[in-house]
Image (tube, rainbow, N blue to C red; front, top):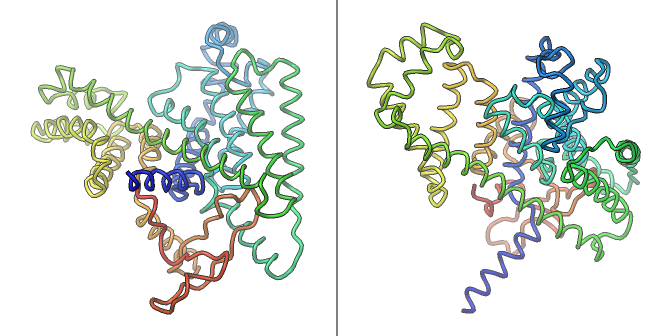
Length: 426
């Protein structure tokens, strides 16, 4: 009984005291922002037909649908071409900044607004990948996705180094950005531009207030009770959102697999054959014909797809099997991107799958990227402390303690950055 209580207490301390999966959430952030950015740039010549004034789904039809479902979109504030171009440009800007990890707490909100505004404007223009992107853009707002591999993390390291030298560091961009976003949010709210959707306005105001609290508390003494409370709340929200992202990915594969089982074409092993003969899904006709002409390959791919999708949620209990199936699914989506001409759907699914990538692999990937950039390798990217706010300093990594020297790894307040964190085993 005491062992169970001890395990529960350790779990509570871990969930409340640590923002888990910093590398996984960073990969998800990079993956979805890159997917949305590439889509916006690819459809730049056709943007007016897809989401703008020249589209078949006109402004009046969109107004009727949104009045019925209460969805949020900034494109309903005006039907002019100029306003549409501004929203589209802000969506591109939000994707670029989130990809780079600049002020991720604020930019993630801009990214979400851009995704919701365009997709809710013309709901019939998307596919399954757009639905995943739609949901993940909301979840990313709740995560601390800029603690590694971001401009925020680099700024935090530089701030920590400056403070270690006794220099005074003042963040002027954060307060200005907070005031500007607050003014815009207040103006839109008073003008009734948030519409009938209650979730999005509540989320926008909650994020804005939380950023203000972070700045106010950050001016006080480190380790105070308000700061500890904000750390706990932020970590719980982050970890909860991370669990939701994982559950969402498992739900997608589980439902897709079980629905496939009920289809006669999937049961007789011929389901993959038919899409390969559709002109819309044949960007490389010769490749599609060669694949469709091999009956054994079609049968193996059909049955293999169902087996992998149904089995994947259960493999989370075994890391080695999970990693194998994860590689298989990512390879499958890459093949779908080339064979069926669905690159953005495949990128969105690969980005969702990335939340399950093992930390050790991501560490090696980060080391390889550091060597490509000419930076010293062999050390893990610095992870900002669980309680660090946007633009706050991280801890300067200290030397790793030698085995048997009787000391702890690093001096007080330092972290061992030579080895990956072993607590999060995705």
